[in-house]
Amino acid sequence: MTSSMKVLIVILNYNGIHLLKKHLSSVVKTEYPNFDIVVVDNGSTDDSVEYLKKEYPNIKIVKNNTNLGFGRGNNLGVSSNPGYDAYVLVNNDVSVESNWLNELVKVAVSSKEIGAVGPKILYSEKKDGKYIINSAGMKVDSHYMAYDRYDGEIDNQKFNVIEEVECLTGGTLLVKKEAWEKVSGFNPKMFLYYEDVDFCLRIKDAGYKLYYCGKSVVYHDCMASSSSMGSFKRNIMSTKNRYISIVSRLGFLIGLTETLWYIFNWIVWKLIYSKRFTLKEFLEKKNE
Image (tube, rainbow, N blue to C red; front, side):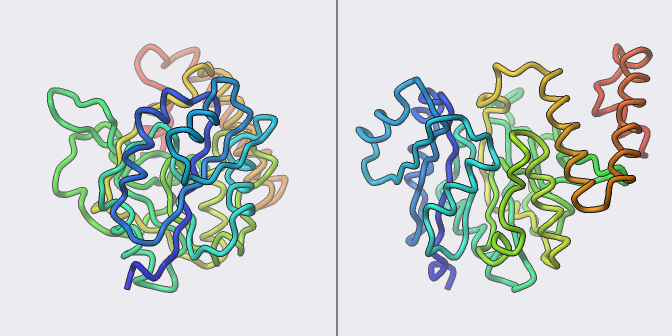
């Protein structure tokens, strides 16, 4: 039975009281009989912790004095709460449907080979009255660049499938305990960006499979939790962490080569193609 899997939902928060007010109630109302929630607060100064204590006294809280970033924050949330069969990472800018967790667990327990499962992630804001895909799992190209599958497409029945994928986004992600322990969680050297890609690739390196479950649906306020960070800074952090990931998995020479490849293509895009394509579109077209 799926309910036999004891699940810990880990929500990372940094000055996100407005997001907790908007999204947390849906997570609390999850229709699954065997889960707990822990909010890891990364040194917020906006009364997030006080709000949680008052409005959600049954939710566990791990309070950090400083911002540990995504990976270390989630690592601490897991290590501070042992005794669970799986951990589900949920961004504080995500709302969920009532049966989302049950559907993820069904897939997770269906095979010992499965290490992690991700849901269908839709943009919270509709376009012309219709929901749009944010992520249906991720694809990884030959340069270890990861892209959300079907990003921008109108949601329909064809996305309600269950299938193996190359990667999953950390915005909402179920990870079995044994897979988490096998890879020792997130790489603590990565503060933010690409750490979820690295995490998933290492789970695959350890022999597990990653699955997308389109029957589990969540809604994402895209970039709401990191809207104050500019695109240039996000790009620098992602490039740095991609280098760390490749070096740790494949060695220094490949890491250096792939980083130089990316910098060269970024310069070409910036000088020639930036008015026609986004960087993501440019790189995807090069790999077609």
